[in-house]
Length: 310
Image (tube, rainbow, N blue to C red; front, side, top):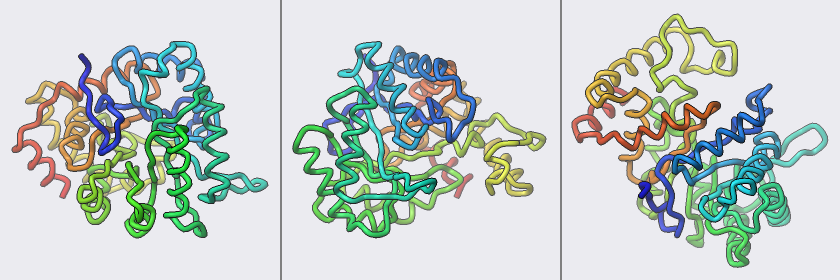
């Protein structure tokens, strides 16, 4: 029996390790992706007990949803999978704007259903807030779609605390997704306390800080992609972060695990975090990440990691 956890107050039960699929057809994020490799990656995840897939309209755009939908159709595993997707991005000429209006969200859900080749979405997120739509009005639109059976749970992503409170005015929000990792703990100041207090579930993205928390880099590593411009990867800050990661390595060695497994296991000890969705570009990465479930951190381990990255 695979390990399962419940997402907040929803009726969705998932493996605590899910799969973020922005590298499956997400050509706008990772150019030159091999789509068959992406599909095989999703199949590997399903074959090894991962049943929570996280995608979005903007990954591609559209292509990630299409490829995930193809895999679910080919494998016949749609009913076994908890499928999350997101919408908010709208193309206006060559510009991309955010739209949370009822009309847009209804159409976004219909379009995602077609691309995913399914008649329901388990978890639909408003991917980013817009500037004009009242957030409670946007969420009420999703509640209508939930009542119609087109979605099973309601999420918001990248919302500030004030936007989240407005969105949850009627108590309809189930899940919140935002950036959170040991190098960016801003969510602990406001979002996580509210989420815990209101029995919501928090799904962090960038859990390994674009690979920095995986323990694979050293001070001589150079980057020629998006990481070259990220503060975490710059000069003295990069070296300080590597020193912190090295302190986690002693914990990993004691558990006969990798640094990434320890870091991911730590997130699962946080109030409000039921599941995490690390991404992957290769099938072997998916299998490796599942070893996180074999790690049982002691309270001493948890406290030490907290101090290292305080």
